[in-house]
Length: 83
Image (cartoon, rainbow, N blue to C red; front, side, top):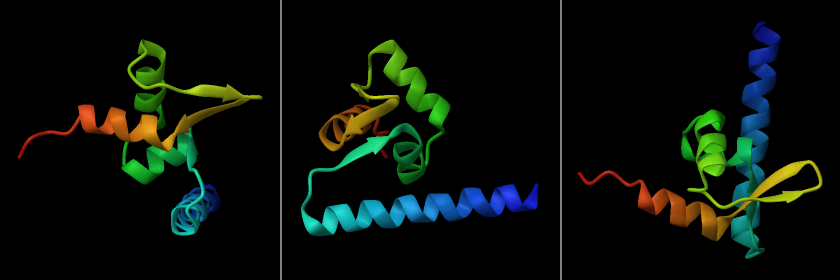
């Protein structure tokens, strides 16, 4: 069980670093469901629910579901809680 948690953390860290490199290089960015969830501190289930309801646009690329950076930002901006 502890090894599984270590693998999850290391995978999340790898995804975060890959995302940072993509932003720094100016490449067009897209997210997988898990990447998007980890990067924005929400659960993958909430991301899937939003896609299923049509609130969050996503596309299929083979087996993978892809969320473009623009679509992700638009969805996040709709769900910002005013302070």
